[in-house]
Image (cartoon, rainbow, N blue to C red; front, top):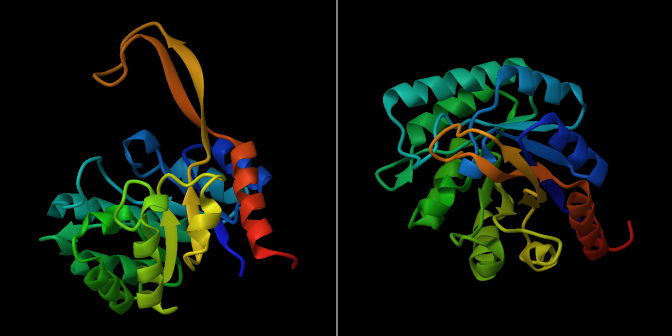
Length: 244
C-alpha cells in the first residue's frame, strides 16, 4: 500500500518546500497558527502555477465551525473563486446542532463540480463521528481529514482504524493532527488513505512594535514549512510501502 502525503502550507515557500520534500499535494491556507483561514486569490493563483496539486482551505474566521448565514455565503463565494483558479480541491468544514451542516456541504459539493472536496477536522469536534462519516458519504465528499477525535492522531489509532472500516472505500480517510516522521508509520498502519502534516519549523524574528493583541513587540517566532521534515515523512511512508 502507498500513502498520499498532504502538507499544510501558508505561502509559496511552503509549496516549494513541500515539492522538494516529495509531498503529493498541499493544503493551502493562511494563518495556520489559528487553525487556518482562506488564503488570498493571488496566493492561490501563484501556488497553482507552481504545479503541485493545491487544495485550498475555505474558512472565513477562527473559532468554532457553526457559521452564520453571512459567513456561509462568503465561503461559498470563496469556493467559486478557488474553482475558477484551477485548484485541485477545496477543504471545508461546517457544523450545525452538533452534526454536519449538510445544506452547506451540499452547496459546496455542487459548486466544486469535478474538483475534490475534503471535509476538515471540524469532523473531530462531533460526538457521533460514525453518523458524520455516513453523512459525508451521502453528500459525495471525497475525503475526510481526521485525528480520530484526539488532539494528536497517534493517540487515536483505534478510532482511526474504526473510521477506515466504516468508510469501506466510499470516502478517503486522511489522518492529520500532530503527525511527524516518528509516528507516521503507526498512523499509516491503521489503513488510512493519506496523511496530513504541517512539517513545520520555527524561525526567530524581532518585531519592534506591537501589531495586535496576539502580536506584541519583541522576539517572536514564525512557522515555516521545513523541506527536511517533509522528506522525512515521505521517506517513512515509502519505507513502510516497501519496494515498488
